[in-house]
Image 1 (cartoon, helix red, strand yellow):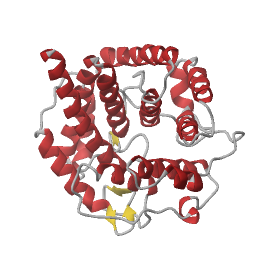
Image 2 (tube, rainbow, N blue to C red; image 1 turned 60 degrees about the vertical axis):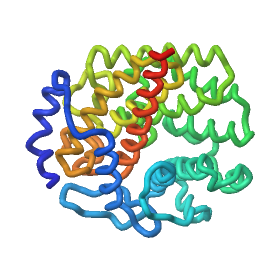
Image 3 (tube, helix red, strand yellow; image 1 turned 120 degrees about the horizontal axis):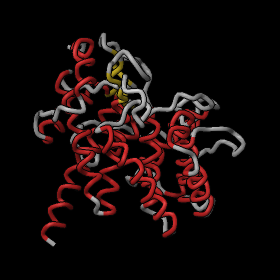
Image 4 (cartoon, one colour; image 1 turned 180 degrees about the vertical axis):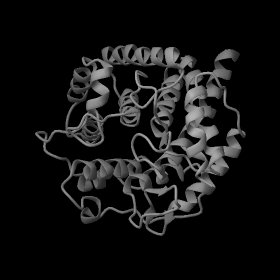
Length: 330
């Protein structure tokens, strides 16, 4: 079933700039995604991924379980988990990734009223400021601190603007998932963009909003030139596409399009979504992490997080298209 990727990925990669992929309707893809995602479910949460041989790891994946909670608001999974809030379960080791995963998970609970602000203050743990971490992890920690009233808005803005001073070609490699390594990709960059929009939605600083506009313009120009975001985002190396990164950037573009009513970004997202739909149909609902599947990060894997991102993106696509229709009517 999943071995098709070995034979078709190179052709897809070669022609993705020229082919407008066609597939089932978005409603059909939603159903396909939900049914596939159920294969990752365990009584205590979601597993991390399934490999090309069908192997499922035993451990629960906290971050994807958080995404599940978010998507369960809109989709009938028919499975309920008891929220995990014990410190020993959330922070089972003193690593940046564990703290990051717990932050994503707890924020998801809080955003859907499964965790009060007082409970959030009680459960969140933050690494010391002296610990070096990638920009997207640092940003979500700062936003969380701001929303919990632990720091003011200036701390978050100053950090974001300091990162904006870096050229994208320098920023993307160092914004790696493994801290202190130059292995950043469109996946981590997609996180970064969505966290920027998280803060944009709550910030009152007009100068910051202007800077965000300039930043997204720069990224949109990359899409106009390449018609794709490659593993390195900028597309100097066109041998690999990080599929989960494509979905996350699509999500960010749709969110920005809805906020600013600038539908150039929605148009870009629609093209990117078509690529993912094409890949999903080839593998009976699964979404691979990279194209070709044997390159890039999480080789030979179909991750549960990609399916959750895709569900979020499909619902955002509906919202963006409705906003577009409304703008025409106005």
